[in-house]
Length: 535
Image 1: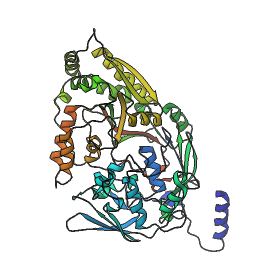
Image 2: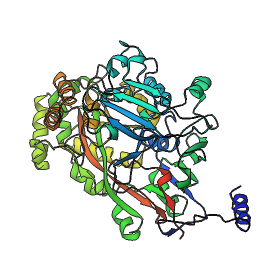
Image 3: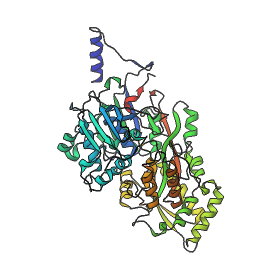
Image 4: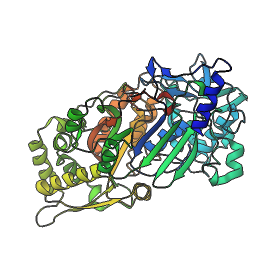
């Protein structure tokens, strides 16, 4: 079909003048504009209000478009909205929507956003991201989510088809940046209600993004192709994006080097070699994500984790420098706190144990675990769960060796596929579990909000009224930095997790792929911003 289209266009060029876009940014384009990349696990859902993982969000940003998008440096640019006006009290945003259509030709209206946002907080829908609307500060979000107010009381109104009005409970300078998150994307009410849970199947899914879902093979691949109905299709270059689901990172690298992939993650420990051999393809740069082992402090959690001394001992005994320098080797940062250090407006807490040598941390860990009643005569056994991945496995093995050597703790390692791992987290079926959080926007509350008592992602069931108060208080402060600092400090005093490292993005990217947003800390990328240069 593509060849036929090209022939048709070329024949037409002899008859009438045709603008043939064979260059972009002064670069000659490849004849085939297909971008193929690797994802680790299968996609949870193609529904913006259901998806919770990073790989799924990448796909959501192609299939749907929110009010605003990220640019290459992490700033916000108009998406489905052309502009907005902010009231003098900085509480009411009035968005003017651009004229655009869904992929089925129906107009995109303000009512589509109202429906999606009400759907997100509908207690009957039970989205794991319902709390995000409260984090955004949308008026009455908390009460609607708990069922204490009707959906219509949520602070979002369609003034007319092209005008959306949102009211928040306190000024948030970063509010616009929160609108790039997939949970805020519109969905077509008529299609959702007609198709039910089948509406996200290829052929059924109707989106307003630059691409449509044309093929999905569970556990194998996701294909999205250019949407000619997208309002800015004329500026789109990539015709097709293919996500191949490859659980083995070494196999993915082999397939990349064989030319089957345009992008893949660098396996743990291989970046120095690959950077030397492929300097134009190996990349490492900061990314707003934190890697931890979450403790289960809920009712289903083990009794030993109720003891702060045990939680501290386990955390102190993990040698982060070895994990970062010897296992990962991709420029990651050893972490002793939760919020990523590069987050805008974040001040690192002064944590005494973070400045100790590893020998000092080990000695304190032994002291604390002994005080808690564990030792050679009463050894502690813990179960550490992680989702299947060679990198996660290497880190888990290293952590288990640290705990065994330093504390005599027996560690039972348990791995499972991503969806099973997520289900176990949600159901509280774990003791210690590998977890990572990538910021939804570039501001500390995207991290700290996760550990509030009402967070849909607080799977470890950490709860501290003072921590909740600090986060609630921060919402109405002109400068919440002091509350964030106090909250982060308190969080690490309570130690509901073992912080391991803070991310860098470590990837192999074919040098013909252009437009990658290396300077965007959030790493929100869009296929429509990419293009393939001629070799």
